[in-house]
Image (cartoon, rainbow, N blue to C red; front, side, top):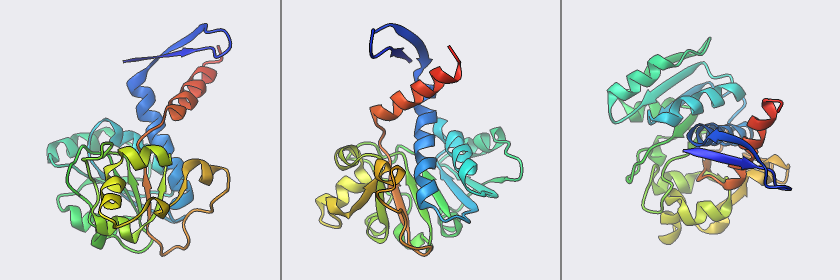
Length: 231
């Protein structure tokens, strides 16, 4: 899949970019940007739930903004988790595969989920004080990566309100059941980046960032990729 990047003034074709790679990188970058505001400053243990294309990008992005020293990967198919773990080489970071999702979640400072699950994988009762949840999968209203308990315990942030409230099952479903409301969303990524919201309220708070993607993120990524080439 190719992404076409054209001049907004003349319509001139400027670049043809690998669309899948662009999406993977900008998704991970958005999660890391949110975590820079929401994860505790000393977050060292990361749990990666899912071993698909995005998993390595997400691990590398989070490691770039926090002093991650240990990453555990969990997937329904342990062989995929092992294959992903074997591909990652980050100096000073120990990479392992989890067989017990609950145990790994209970210890994690950052939990990043990038799956196609339709049923909750991470339960709210597993989350320790100060944990940060990064939810990238579950991009349809019918999908879930966390349960209602996790959502009700967390301080909720999103990439865009419109997208999260119409597409993200982790928020759409509990809102429909009255567990939370749209007003439960404290801020979006723009609010955080522009300093309109300070992020987590305390080191003991549990934070949740729900990402469903936005065209503006693709555009920003394309501009960065184009400018980096010095064309």
